[in-house]
Image (cartoon, rainbow, N blue to C red; front, side, top):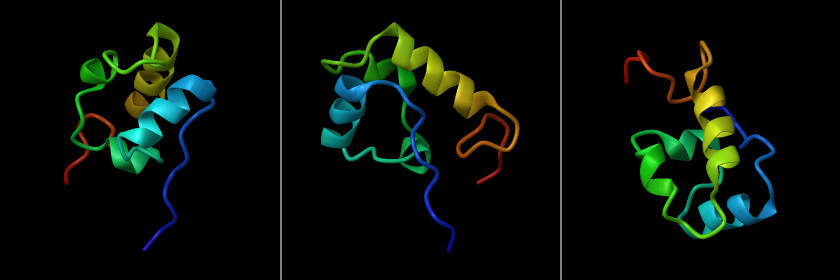
Length: 68
């Protein structure tokens, strides 16, 4: 088992909001709808953009096109 991939630096409010939802790493985002996270207090457009960029990067945890 590998260590979880940490979240990118998205800011304390967004990190805290995600943690309250049980999302503490990029691996925890697998299968989650990023757009739904926008409804969380503290998760703004910048955090969503950064999360999408990291998740869409080749080889990223939960990246589009990755078989699971």
